Image 1 (tube, rainbow, N blue to C red):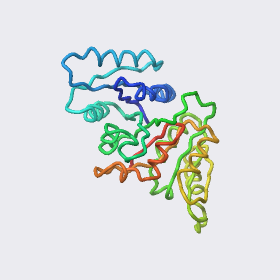
Image 2 (tube, rainbow, N blue to C red):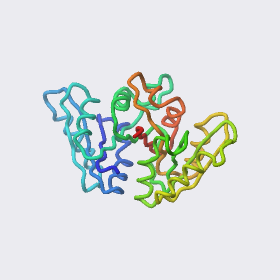
Image 3 (spheres, helix red, strand yellow):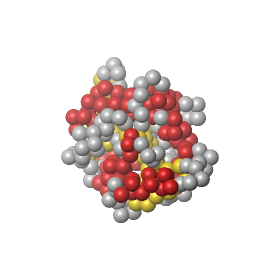
Image 4 (cartoon, rainbow, N blue to C red):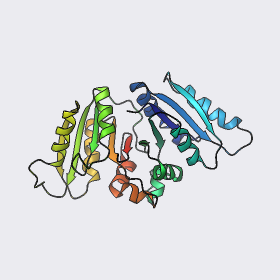
Length: 257
């Protein structure tokens, strides 16, 4: 379970968009909230002011700040996260469409491809209003024994008494005795999670998942993530990039166990 929510900031309002969902998650899970920025400057007054302004916007009792002075922003973020118990790194994304690295931004790209901690990314289509529902969507590709993105999302849903909606999108109806989403939901129910299943058929994967997220006004969407030093597209896959770019809620990425 997450015990520390780590939020990298750079002074921009885009980066600060993650504060709302990160603060909510930290409070909901009774976790610490660590606001981070990195600097090369000898005078750190500007960076300390960025952290102070962000801290004033939080309500989490366990909120604090950390100023990195390492060789790179991504390195500072990873080092600070590594020093925290059970961290989740929460970052904002760019949402540009030209290149995979531009979907998340260069710093988030480096963090994602180097980190073994789960991440929560907030894209440009994030709806800043507070969701009224207690639903989470977990997108899966395979059966529970090989799926990524399930254990942490299931633990959060169980801890918060939320309903998990497991969704699998295939191009044809499953030939298996039990479709993927149904089998996964049954597995989660065995772990004490209130879970339902959505086995869908479509030519493209991302649009029906996003439609489900919007119809439920879900708190977050959980998807799998495979660490890969060769690039963000191989680390996530094209469908995951599409989900990150267009999701109206935070997207939780969990590395395989």
